Every structure is written in C-alpha cells, then in structure tokens.
Length: 218
Image 1 (cartoon, rainbow, N blue to C red):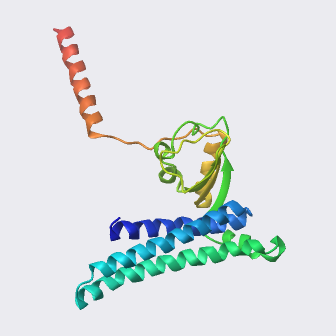
Image 2 (cartoon, rainbow, N blue to C red; image 1 turned 60 degrees about the vertical axis):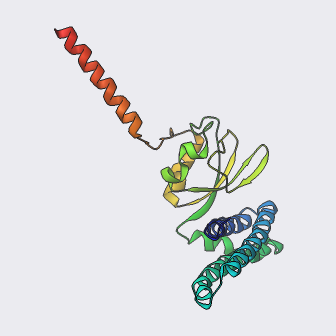
Image 3 (spheres, rainbow, N blue to C red; image 1 turned 90 degrees about the vertical axis):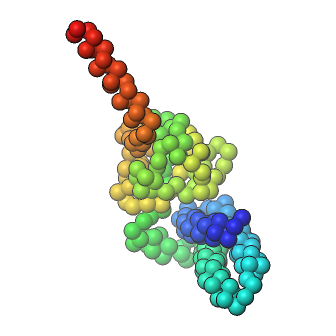
C-alpha cells in the first residue's frame, strides 16, 4: 500500500472504531468491544507501516520536513483509536455506574440506533450499495448482524435479509425514515442513477417511434 492508501485506511478505521466503541456501551456488547480492540491493533500496524515508508522515502532534511506532516496525521488517527479502546473499557463497570453514556449520546446530533429488517421490508434482497442507504437516509450502517454473526463496517456488496439487525449512525429524522423502510410501512425509494448510455438508448427508441408514426401517417 502507498502512504496515501495507508492514511485513507487509517481515516476510515478511525471513524468506524469510535462508532463501534459507543455502540458497544449502548448495547452492552462484548463482541463489539472485541472488534474495537482488534481495530486498535490494526491501527498500530498501519501507523508502523506509514512510519517505515516515510523514513525510507526521506533522503534530505527538506524531505524529512515535508513528510513530518504525514506522521502527525497518522499519530492523530492512532490517538483516536487509542481513545476508542479506552471507551470500551467502561464495559468493565456495572451498568448503574455508567448512566452518563446514554445521556451523552442523546445530546449528540448524530445518534447510534438499531433496527431489525422485517420480511415485509422492500429493502430485503438488495445490497447496501444498491440501496444507497446512507445517501437516501443519511444513516450509515456501522454494523450488521445476520445468521452468520456480526459484520462490522459492512461493504456495499453485503445483501440485506429479513431478520437482520443493523446498527446505524445518523440524525433522528434519518433514523425514523429508515425504521419505516425497515418495518415495511414505507416502500424503499431507490436513488435515481441516470447513465449517458441509457439516455442515448432512450433517445434512439424515441426517434425510432417517431419514424414509425410518420410512415403510418404517410
């Protein structure tokens, strides 16, 4: 991986690890806490890889000066993952000793919530990418539990099935909208994707129909 790719990976991981850390407290999930600790170790490996590549790339004092900013970004992302690991350590406390967690998350603009997919939902049978969940509702799926277990930060090719539990981060309005889709009370509205090829095909079909109508008139 290049330094750019490593930094992108660290950025994406630092986002999901914080969401999972808070979700683990909200749902008292040891599985999520374990995943947070795994991601924290992966972040350490990524930080080491970036440091190695930067040191190998530095030839002069000027190079070192320019590349030092990359190390600062990597260190900042690593500190975020360290903080997430400390958050999940709160699971060791009894529930009555951490009531502030729910109150704190309640005050945030974007909340972490869970919902279950009903067999009646029109989302069932489609992949996350096809549905465009985040684009349509503003809610990002940070974890999904199906018959095979938990999937964290699921890829776009993961298919939604009836009975799946999903944990999302998003606004209150976006979550309410997603719940309506999930329980089947509202049909999913697929994002409109217009491709140039489709437009050309439509224009050709329209032209062909016009020609046929002219011939019939003659």
